Length: 387
Image (cartoon, rainbow, N blue to C red; front, side, top):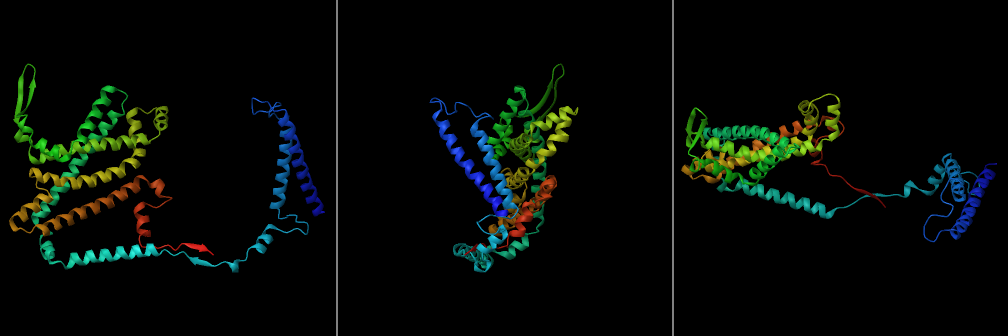
């Protein structure tokens, strides 16, 4: 009975295929010469459509019977599982590791190179490591380190505020707001930081005094530019304006990454633009703003070394003032390098946890980049092939 049932199903399928070929030949003769559409059209009542539905039913029946485990081969029914077991012998498969000799050679060369560099740095007496240890916690060095960190913090806060305001002005539909903001970003982002430092430090060459004049009262007060534009003030002003140009683009990119539908949905709930920005737009944009802001903060920390040009007592200037007297240039520069690397490492860890906080919905399902890197840094995978 089973064999007869399958034989009838396959007979219907073969007859339908032959009938479809004959119908296609007939329709081809009636085909319009100026179009690819048959004369009768592809309507539901078309003979070809009816045949196609018949063949589709046969195919569905054939797949259903195969899923039930019976395939007619002219003999007794054989299940798909039994057929696959007869064709594949697991004992005949051999799993061998895929070799990577060039990768192994590259790893060995890198390890040997790093060991040679470390050995040369440790045993080279010209580095004067005892002198480095002596000046590592020198009070003058610690004071310069504090100046560097405080300058970075003040400048970054002002840059975030100024950059956010400039970004909102750039996104404004009013040309009176967007054009000045774009000009601000173009000017202070385009000029080098060192040039801006020297320019603001020498502002007294073009502006002698800062005065406030009120109509009817005259000059209310006047102060000399040299008294106001001290080296520290010049550094704060120059670096804040320089970083504000970069932060404006970072904030603008983060705000543009949020779908416009979020603001429209907030407006439908009755929120004003300010409340929508604080409660809806900015929290979502922070995922895109935090990573580049952290990188910009680290870059600003290193950029503060330029303020030694205008005699601000930062970390580098403190080291320069010491080796100008002792002529121990290399040990003091190594001390400066050590403290910069230490502060950057701490800031990188803080950036990682801040990113994880704002991306907690995503990191709940997939680990953070730093954790993933630590899990896989000393992990070697063996690729396998079947021979």
